[in-house]
Amino acid sequence: MHERQRRAEGHVRRRCWRMLAPKWAHEPLGGAGAALRGGRFNPPGAPALYMSEEFSTAVAEYEQELGFRPGTLCAYDVESASMIDFGDIRTRKALGVSDGLLRSPWKHVAFVEKRTPPTWALAERLISMGVDGVRVPSAIAAGFNLVFWGWNRGSSTQTRPWTRLAICPAINPRGGPEFYSRRVSAWPTSPARLE
Image (tube, rainbow, N blue to C red; front, side, top):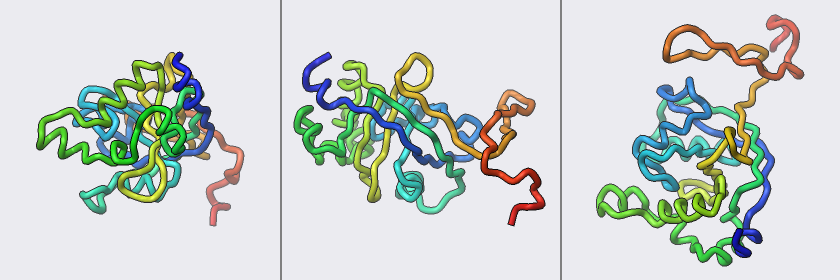
């Protein structure tokens, strides 16, 4: 591991937020939606999991230039020992990353100019260094986003959807219901007691 990476890499453990489009609501940890056309920090074909530290940032990121559209706001518990925090100016300096690079117009560069956006090149560099993800300032709204290229299987980054429901039915696109066990600690024992 390079000395500059060792100084910049950090640990995160927190609740994060993500909006799911109806098409991907059945797969809250998939990353396939971002792989279709790419995202600010992933080229097409490369799965990535985008989350926000605040729910308002997650909604703004989801709507972007499209405006209001249906979606599901989900909370996630995230823990990672392999994150680079670009919210920290010293980290950006140590890795030679400017604020302008992080906010570059990646869609215009990729789809109009037909060039590789600098954020894709940055992501490839960090992935080759063994980094699971980044914490970056949102280019759309106030707040920060977390972008993961490695999560859950074989990774030091663990993410899981969070809900207080005991049994949460989900639709299996291959047919038949699936049920996921979740925490129940704060919910009343009877739905009739809900106000």
